[in-house]
Amino acid sequence: MRTNVSNSAKVRIEYDIMEEDWRDYGKEALATSGYIPEYDITAVPNDFNVAVIVSFIDSGAIRIPGFQRNFIWDLARASRLIESLLLGLPVPQVFLYQHDRGPLLLIDGQQRLMSLYYFVMGRFPKREARAKIRGLFDISGSLDKSILHDDELFSNFGLSLKGQDGGSGAQSPFHGKKYATLGDERRTLDLRTVRNVVIKQVRPTDDHSSMFEVFNRLNSGGVNLSAQELRMSLYDSEFLTRLLRLNTWSKWRRLLQRPEPDVRFKDVEILLRSFALLLWLDEYRPSMVKFLNRFSGHCKYQFDSMMIDHVECLFAEFLDACSDLPDNAFLVAGGSRFNMHLFEVVFAEALRPRLDDTSTAVKTLRAADISAIDQDSAFRDALLEGTTKPAKVKARLRIAKKVLSSR
Image (cartoon, rainbow, N blue to C red; front, side, top):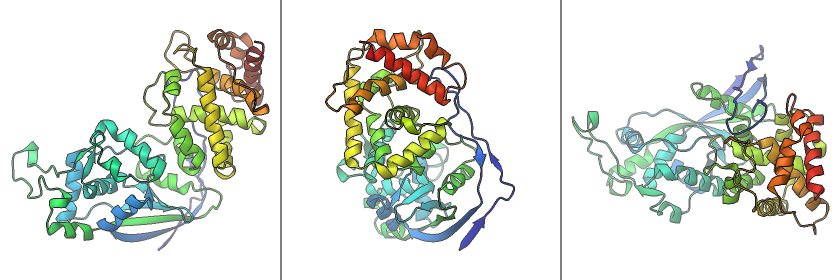
């Protein structure tokens, strides 16, 4: 089936502008406004049975893109889905996106498909471990059996199908059953089908924004995706995956004063900005959102494994140079918000000499120098208005370089 989706009126997208409570200075938008292009897409329905769906997830042939949230269903809701399939009741269709010959990206239906996967695997994710489990999926595309058997991450998955009102009324005959104990019903479940609509964008050829349009419209009651959430999938790469790993390092979390990674990747975006200003400053031109998009695309196609390892080493050296700094070194004075603009210029200018001469050691950073940059009147003037203008960005970097190189 071929579907042409067009919008000649070019409806204008208005993304939410979010003021983040851990960044200082300014109210820079996380996403740009723009026009929806005319799409030419194919939408092919497939009735995959449960056994095939689970094998696809297990092999990484179906992957959860970066903008998707963690698995959130509780045991009772996941159990009701399994019961519906066992009873032969229809369940809502799932939307997948096909990009070239890569894995199918799950646009809508994560809770349903992952419930099936966890039930067949016999394990249910503990609520407090779900962010960690998602991170493991992001790194490898699937879960090793040793991870599934980790009792700190998972509990056994037995169907929770009590009567109505939590106990009264008839109880389902499947209550307490596990996949391994279903008996003859196990084959029945394996062969039950779920409608999967596989979308492929034919035109335009230079982006894959229809995936996000479908996602947003299917989830119109929720919060629109941030720019970094979009980036994590549109420019999915080994580099961005490595940033996810760096984002969990304890020394970095100490500087952020945020023990857990942000669910909307605000902290990952700070790392991306900092590396972009260090490695790609000559290419900078506003807006910052478009600059980071272009940098992410550059990294996707130009950064090989050796370069990404080098980036990780640079980050490790910078964190070592921060060892003597107090925990609140990059927080707004007297507050708890993270001063992104201060951090990114210190990061870029502390490491820039290392780029020019690989034998140069990164100097140990001192609290007095960080404070001197923050309190510099010219630095503060460069944050009052138009913070992403090239002159303002370079002025902040110039002040950081002057302070750090004067030692």
